[in-house]
Length: 89
Image (cartoon, rainbow, N blue to C red):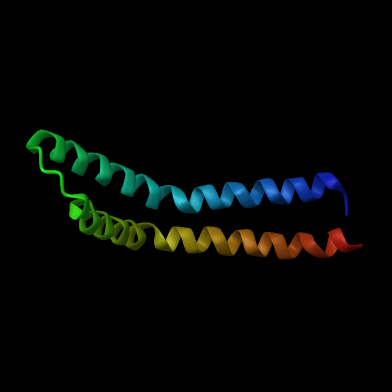
C-alpha cells in the first residue's frame, strides 16, 4: 500500500462527496438567496421564513437528482471494492 494510492482514494472520495452534495447545496443556496432578497425588499425580518421553501426545494432536488446520486455512489463503491484487494497485497 503506497502513499500515492491512499491519496488517490482520498481525492476520489472528496470528489464524489462534492458531486453528491452539489445539487442539494446549490438548491438551498439559490432559495436562501431569493428569500433573503425578498426579505430585504419587503423589510420582513422573519428568520423562520426561509426554512419551509428550503425544505421543499431540497426535497425536489433529491427527487430529481436522487437516482443519479445513488448511481454515482454505487459506482464509486464498486470501484473502491475493486481496488482494495490490490492495495492489501
